[in-house]
Amino acid sequence: MNTEQHIVDPQHPDPAVIERAAAVLRRGGLVAFPTETVYGLGANALDASAIKKIYIAKQRPASDPIIAHIHSSEQLALLAMQVPDVALALADRFWPGALTLILRRRPSVPENIAQGTGTIAVRMPDHPVASALLRAANLPVAAPSANTFTRPSATLAAHVLEDLDGRIDMLLDGGSATIGVESTVLDLSGDAPTVLRPGGVLLDDLRALIPELRVAPKYLAQDTDTQSPGQLLKHYSPKARLLLFTGADHARVSRSMHDNAVQLIGAGRKVGIMGADAELDTLPAGVLKAALGNRDDLATTGQRLFAALRELDAQDVDVILAADPGRDGLGAALWDRLLRAAEGDVINIT
Ligand code: TXA
Ligand code: MG
Image 1 (cartoon, helix red, strand yellow):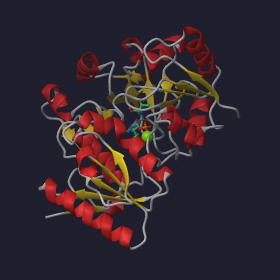
Image 2 (tube, rainbow, N blue to C red; image 1 turned 180 degrees about the vertical axis):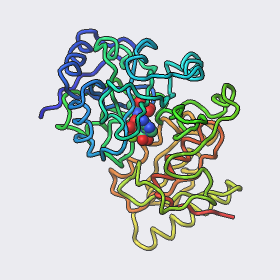
Image 3 (cartoon, helix red, strand yellow; image 1 turned 45 degrees about the vertical axis):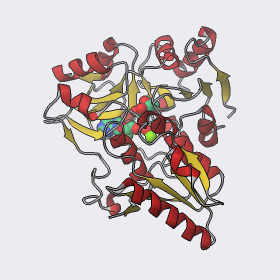
Image 4 (cartoon, rainbow, N blue to C red; image 1 turned 90 degrees about the vertical axis):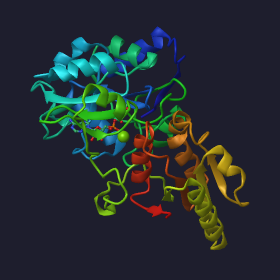
């Protein structure tokens, strides 16, 4: 199929283009669109055959459930039932925004949005293009990240095309996603509120409302000591092998990355490094660099992370070296993505 592309002003999208995209959704087609976190691949969340097309386009296993996106709190009633008060309080505080809530699913919602779970993940995105599209379609829209399964998420329209050109009906190009990592996924369907994926809404901000918050990332533990690579789901993966360097003393971690880069180059490997701007200045010749901003500027690191992985991949490196961003603030989400991209290949510098 031909993927129809439209460039839209991210702040003031052309209503005629938005209407065209909404019509695609209404007739059961697939539209990729920008959100503040990453690009989403949307389909009518109330239409099982439209949802099925998402799994096919992304080559995603049917066992991996999809988030439904809404533009108003009233739409929640279409999707979820027995919505607990804490969900309403969280929605009030964080929506529109980078928080996804898992709730009990209404039986009328197609099963294949979240196979075998009895639940539904819901988010109200905070992006003028996403909001306009959701309003125009007036449907809840199922949308995973707009990348092929296991690849880094798409933060630019070019990334969507890399993975999905010819596999989806339409792409709205609204420029770069502003946060750059996906939403925080919070499960409210069980006994204790549990974060399954750290993301754009920070854990400390959630704890202010839910002091008893549990954090249990679905695919791995937070700490390198307890994580077991065997349990890691391959995800966010560059084609190259990614080595993730961690350690209490950042200067030593940085030096070790340099030493490793020199060794790998000596062994004839093509090496890329993702790192803070200042660290990249002193690298040995021949190393390919992807700059992530200042080391203490996690917002910029977040915006750049997935693009950096894709840039280095496009240059056919064999190995990518990356440094631990810490665990504070957005660092928890960045660490999670890097750890999964590295498939557990963590080098601890003590
Ligand atoms: O920021 C985001 O969340 C982006 C934008 C497009 O909204 N979407 C996104 O979707 O990242 P996706 O499909 O790439 O990741 C959704 C995550 C997956 O880890 C999935 O397993 C989990 O949410 N999830 C979705 N529905 C769930 C459910 N009912 N129960 C448990 N986990 C669920
Ligand atoms: Mg994804």
